Amino acid sequence: MSKPKMWYLNRRSVAQAFFIGIFCAFIPMPFQMALAAILAFYFNSNLPISVGLVWLSNPITMPPLFYATYSLGAYLLDIPAREFNSDMTLDALLSQLSEIWLPLYLGSLLSGLVFASIAYITMRVLWRMHIISHWNKRKAERLAREVSSINSESGDV
Image (cartoon, rainbow, N blue to C red; front, side):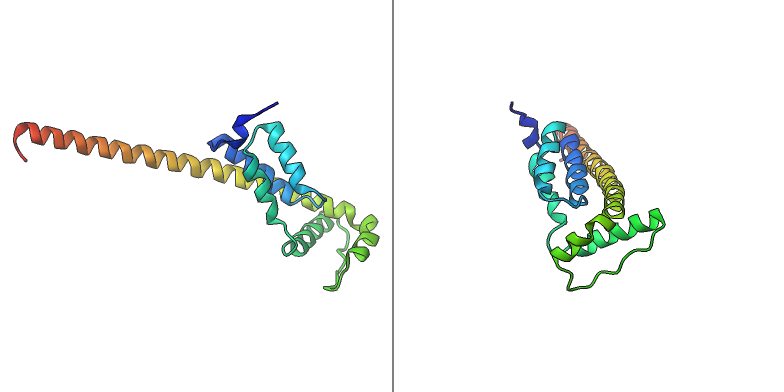
């Protein structure tokens, strides 16, 4: 089943792609790109943008991003946030996962929804502003041609 609109750039598909990509970037799970691709396919959004935006969470940004979402979740659940060492290993993190998963996922889902919604609205507004600017430019060019045509017909050149 082919969905050619997944490759088009239009206001709806790009705005949805920003929502999907940023939302998936905030979800702490393996294969975030696969999730973004599946959602882009399902919602007929721009696939490359959806998948590319997932890289906002990368090996450099993941520790502070997920610690911030964990802290937010802990705050919302009214539990004390744990301090993590800079020498934290994956094994140490996985051993504590049973204790931190709820605040981590609550903060991640909430942050993902908020930032993805902001990105969606921003892209819709920016796209609309671009279109209005383009229309105004074309209108000004058309008016200049009409004035030039009137001047040339009346001999006021």
